[in-house]
Amino acid sequence: MERRRLVLLLSTVASLQVSNSASSGNIPSRFWCFSEEIALQCGVTEQCKKERPAQKNAAIVNIGLYYESMCGGCQEFFTTQLYPTFQKLSSIMNVTLVPYGNTEETKVGDHWEFDCQHGPDECLGDIIETCTIAIVKTLANYIPFINCVEGSKVTPKEAAEKCAPQFSIPLDQVLNCTTSDYGNQLQHQMAVLTDSLVPQHNYVPWITLNGLHTDDIEEKATTNLLKLVCDTYPGEKPPACNSG
Ligand SMILES: *[C@@H]1O[C@H](CO)[C@@H](O)[C@H](O)[C@H]1NC(C)=O
Ligand SMILES: *[C@@H]1O[C@H](CO)[C@@H](O)[C@H](O)[C@H]1NC(C)=O
Image (tube, rainbow, N blue to C red; front, top):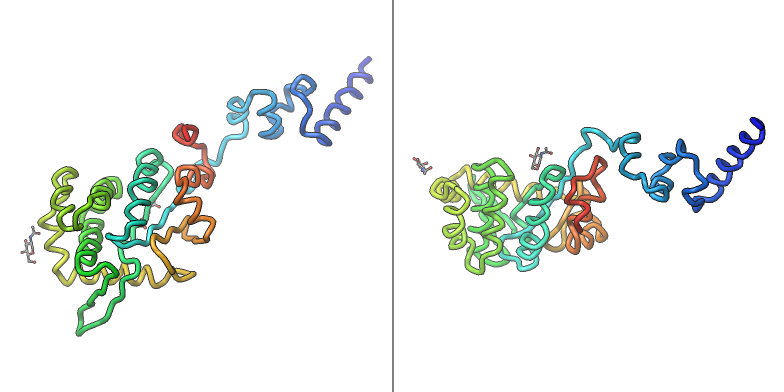
């Protein structure tokens, strides 16, 4: 009797290993958490997560955005993917904003001059965003403001004037920074970050995932950033990951 049960059990395990499609009825409960696939068949995915916990203290996902303030595709990505995703996934996601894009810089004396794709209004928009990042410091506090600027159909300067009070941004200080040597150096740092991309960017928005850019990452980020961040995060997924 004992021997027959053992044989039966062994054959169950064997068939389980050969075929993943064994139905849950045949699988002894102690194997239910053997793999995610079996857990799914047995309807115990949640319970098994407790036995095989997701990685603790997992590194959060970093999205890098290399853009320029007046590029239509950048504005669209910012307002329809980046900001809505950050609002839902701020616990597992960091964002590095680099407002420079296809700008070119030249050193004149000890000062940098910037030549922006969409002209001086864009240069001012970029440095407003750069100075805001430096002054406000906390992503959760400056990203709503930059989203507001990027979503406004007026020049970035006009948008900043409209958006600053809504998001408690010290606009006087920011505008002061944009004409200072400090602001000029900060904007040069954005050039340095952009120019040190590997591979070099050849369009904007240029998106990186944990520092990496590929056409596939760009495609996934611009179509469903929420899914990309959720799929990349190695830790336990927040509830927002199940909503899309
Ligand atoms: C988030 O990104 C910013 C900008 O790159 C960086 O300074 C900061 O250290 C990052 N924070 C975390 C928690 O990774
Ligand atoms: C603007 O800059 C000037 C000169 O650097 C400084 O004295 C002043 O306090 C600044 N204003 C603000 C609001 O930061």
